[in-house]
Image (cartoon, rainbow, N blue to C red; front, top):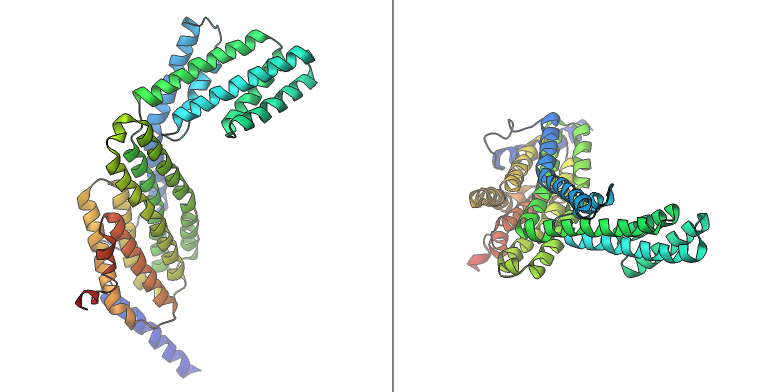
Length: 391
């Protein structure tokens, strides 16, 4: 038993020393460990930076819609005009025009159904129930988006509750005003840029992945299970960011198709969409790396932390500077160094071990980083098989 334990200890120490000697490190690997408070502050500031301009547009649109409804339509309390403007713009950039039109469709459907029901049922709770039911059913038939169904239901409830036809037509006029303002904002004054949409969504994925890998590196180095749980929770949020990225891809394609300006500049958008596709693979590689690294032994974990933290750093840099070619080049160079070393020295790690699986995951994420940074896939894959060109 004692001899077996000593042999196991020597084997684990040998693997750790192998990695300690060879895995490339950066000079500030140990110093570059932001705390929880700093990460929270960065998250809040990032959300504010992304949200302040769209929110400012919605506030301005609401004020303009209210002024138009009061001064030109003569409505003393045009509460729905600013609401319609806000709701029309309160979606992801690239979908605001269609959202405003759907709002108007829902209002028209609800008012039309409610007027017919009130005409024959003469108000009351049964009229409200019937109008709401048929308004929502017809709205779902026309367009099954939630905003259409909700606005149809609200309009039907207002008409049957107040029993005043003028309420319905005033609400329709307010909706027209609010939707008109939203369309002017979204289609004329502040046309979304598809490249910005894509890069913003890409940055969110990269930052989420970088935070998860940074927490993983901290957990490995400190042998801290709480940090490991935090890393797991952070990485579990990646599907939400990837879903937002998919929405941005769809929206960017819609903008290119419907905008004459961007239709003439479709090539850069198509190239950025291809890069965005690579993020699915990159995120999957990052999750696999975190899982395999946490499965290694306590002796092996600290030696893995510097490389994982270095990858987290280059991912965060690319997220903060998505258009900087120098940043992408540094990321590709750093990933290439790691992938090249792993291709040469990885076979020295005992097969069918958690450490071997982690080395494979490191190699895959390094390849994905290089491709996302702009390196040709064939060139990036040569890092896995450097001798393949000699054949």
